[in-house]
Length: 233
Image (tube, rainbow, N blue to C red; front, side, top):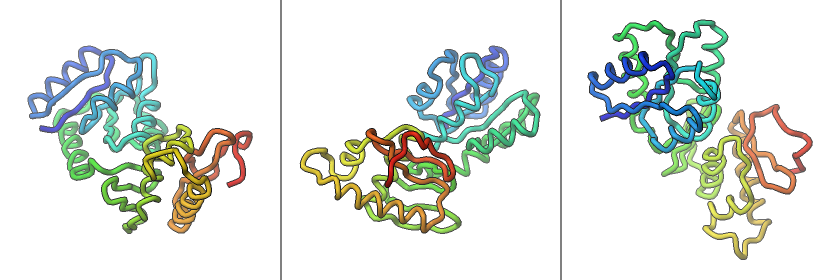
């Protein structure tokens, strides 16, 4: 049974959606506290998130961004915001579908079914800006091709994708590759990072790894940087 979590602050709409999805054969939970929503969703780890944009405490756009940075959970936006710029912004952040209220029951259920079908078998996949990484085989799916990464490169990229836009420390990377931070030659870490960076460049990936002075590293979009914190790589 597929598991769906509803993020909707309007009580009547939330209950109506819950009832409809339960009758359609889904297991359903609802978010009622709108603090730390992303953490709640990641902890629940549903097969699909049904997300409103106009929420108390936090924007649905922010939730969508954070979920897509830290997981491969599909997001279906259901909102009263019918402006094209809102739809394009949500899709750019990684939303898988965008529907406006009011929405016919049949259309919503069809979109839910379609999104879930697209994600069948993708529970081991992490999403990047324009690629997917299989966490079991370290196969990278990008530009209609698949590339199997060397094990160490796959482990490093997995850590960066799991952290989203957060900084990754050198200790984090050493633990990912060698399972320890003791007796590790920093040059060995640099060699592995350089190899991964070259692989990403050769595949024309839109994200790159940059060092953050005195702290660690970060995965960012090409063309974006915090120059006050970056150092030579």
